[in-house]
Amino acid sequence: MDFNLGFVAHAQKRGLHVDYGNLQSQEIPTTECILLQGSLYHFYPSHRTVIERLLKAATVKVIISEPIRTLSAHKNIFLRIFAKYITKTASGFHEKRFTREEMFQLANEFHAEKIVEAGTDMVIFFKKITIR
Image (cartoon, rainbow, N blue to C red; front, side):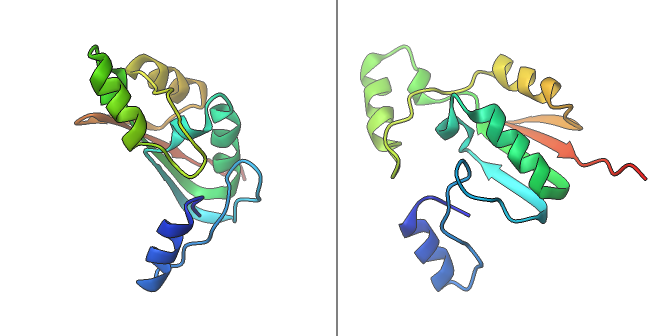
C-alpha cells in the first residue's frame, strides 16, 4: 500500500501487488509481515496511531526502518532547505525527522523484539505474540 500513485503504477507494471491507499484513513489489509520503509515521519504527529494500526494488521511481524541521520537535520541551513524540497511527497512537506533517541523510545513503548542500527537508519522489529 502506498499513497504515491506513480509508485503504485510503477510497481504494478512490474507485476507487484501494490495498492493505492492511505495508512491513516483506510483499513490496512491483514497480512503476515508489514514493512514501513523510511516513511514513519510522514505520519507525524499521528505516528503512534499508525504503528498501532500496523501492529493490529500484521499476524507475524512488523518492521519499521526509519532514517535517524538525514540532511533534513543538518546544521547547514542550505542543506536543510535542499533536503526539504527533494523529499516532498504527494501529501506535501514533512519536516519532522525522528532522532535515534525518539526511535529507541518508540521501540520500547511498543515492545520491540529487536533494534538494529544500519548505516543512517534504525530498523525496529516487532514480533506478534499469539496468546493461546
